[in-house]
Image (tube, rainbow, N blue to C red; front, side, top):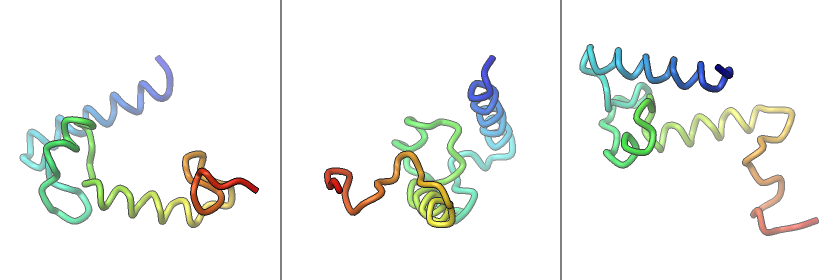
Length: 80
């Protein structure tokens, strides 16, 4: 089993625990109900799309190395 597999299994386990305490489908950050599409796409998600995007932007803006999915220049179609 790879590290990625272990991480996903841990996230699934955490989602199952949130179901038991009736917190599943509620964003851990803003406490708003998550969209059904979000939960269908990523059933183990802890955060709504909006909060997840904000966290990723904050994380990437503080990194010294570029995020692999974040364009280095304006749009990903631009070249230098």
